[in-house]
Image (cartoon, rainbow over all chains, first blue to last red; front, side, top):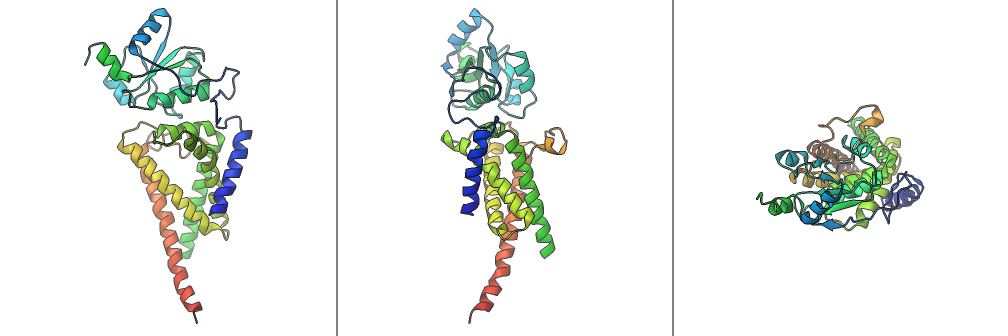
Length: 148
Length: 154
């Protein structure tokens, strides 16, 4: 059994190094495009910073929570994009927004991890370079806008 | 019984090969699938799993399909993988994570994704059935060997 795992590890590492769709150990980069390397962890921002950014130019807000949570309530103008690599929503999203689009991703609160997962997916698969994460998530938006 | 066991081994092997080829076609997608399970793992572990797991599946699948002398080890390893998948999908299902399991690529057999077959709940039951099948065959083989061992004693 150990021999099978050892052989799998050797073959896996060799295949990964040769594959254009292989996992990049560090840093995370776009496989096909010549886009600059994306950050492995996007910077966290507050809702006040997001509002300032939105006042200064177009920013895409992305809701990384489950579709049901999005339907129950979301930040106005946000697009629903749960972090599923097989989601049919990813390709249309990427075709609408070029890789240098500033994108702010949020999930439920500061405790959730969907934002990080989605950021990793968008950076790895589509080469997005200007990704930000709303640190306190939807809960921060509700608290700051007095909706809670 | 023997031929039924042989058929189940073959089917498990084919399923493992199918799962492996789908993952090897896009390792990055499989890596993000692992991240989507939101397991509290250090950064290098999901990456290592994404690189190595598909090859463990491929090797186990080949050994089971070939019915080689290594196939009991392959079956034990496959049982371990199915147990791992059962736990991962169970926690995702219980937490209500809206993710696809990243297990089998329906595109490989010319089908477009079917939401129910790709759901976490279905993935959990499938992994549970596959785990029970591999564990059942292993148990049957152990029992089959026990009397032989006894006979060889002086």
